[in-house]
Image (cartoon, rainbow, N blue to C red; front, side, top):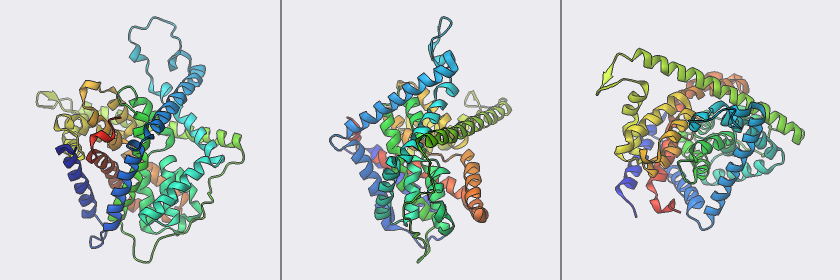
Amino acid sequence: MFSTLNLQSLLGLVVIVLACWAVSENRRVFPWRLTLGAVAVQAALVLALFAIPGSQGVLAAVTGAVDGLAAATRVGAQFVFGYLAGGDQPYVIENRPALFVFAFEVLPLILVISALSALLWHWRILRWITRGFGFLFQKTLGLGGASALAVAANIFLGMIESPIVIRAYLDKLTRSEIFLMMVVGLATVAGSTMVAYATLLAPVLPNAAGHVLVASIVSAPAGVLLARIIVPEKSGQGGAYADYSSALKYDSAIDAIVKGTSDGLMVVLNISAVLIVFVALVALVNVMLGGFWLFGEPVTVERLLGFVFAPVAWLVGVEWADAQVAGRLLGVKLTLTEFVAFIQLGAVPEEGMSERTRMLLTYALCGFANIGSVGITVTGLSVLIPERREEVLSLVWKALFAGFLATLMTASVVGALPGSVFAR
């Protein structure tokens, strides 16, 4: 049964599309067929992964795999860090939740999944899965071969690793295709971080691993659509052919594991550095705002973000009672990265927000679209295509806007579906 909340999400979907059309480089061109097709693909993927008989068994297997990876990673982390990673404690514990240390219990997951992803790529398993999604996006969204492959790769790889997959074609991509690749990179997440997000949400969200996986897959068509609306492809351009032979190669299984671990370490270091700096900057601003009060409470960046983004959360389909908290988390995702937002979402007790709000936020937060990623995108693409650095710089803030809205669009599509789809 449909409810007013479903209609609320539909309204949000329309507003998101209109917002992108308002900043389009060519408002006379609107991709109607792509709009209908992208929304249909999103809805079909969600239904396929949640409503089709037997799909729950697949999601349960995903959850089991995530739990197994987390448990195995915990063993490795405890071997290196001992009781700091949750091992046997040398003293009596009175506050067990305080034992959770992000650096020792979440970041090691990224190392393990990064190495495993490289191994699966070397064994061609992940390569064939990516090729399958690339074929799907090529046929349903009308993308050129290179763009379709880059979009598919973004579902499982990072926003810099995926362009490496089509490195041979980067100089042949049009302005619209470069922008599309940037937007989808910001709208999705890497496989290594998916597991970390699922681990953070597992205690408070049923099927957390399934929702996080679906969120990254379903946000790809949303990113394609919003990118095409803002920077439309010119007639007769685009469509670079890709033969699916990747520039991302490993010499052996051991080489894949070693290089995957090395790449994962760089991701871990980058995440750690960005979190330290951005959290510190927000804390500094909070100190500066400490003398101001609003509605009987001190003004903080988080509270201000809650006020600004509460209407946005409501448009996605969140009940107004939860809109303030949901808006704050959306603002935290944009300014402090999705990692901080997921940590804070996981810390909200079950009675602190409805299950619908928590599920919609999982989709809305699951993307790399944050201010810190702007620098990563510019730096990475400047290395891969230095001759187009100025073009990348001119597009990156628009890409952040579209990438942020793409995850909101995904949440809106999920919110527009009957709740019975997920009540299994």
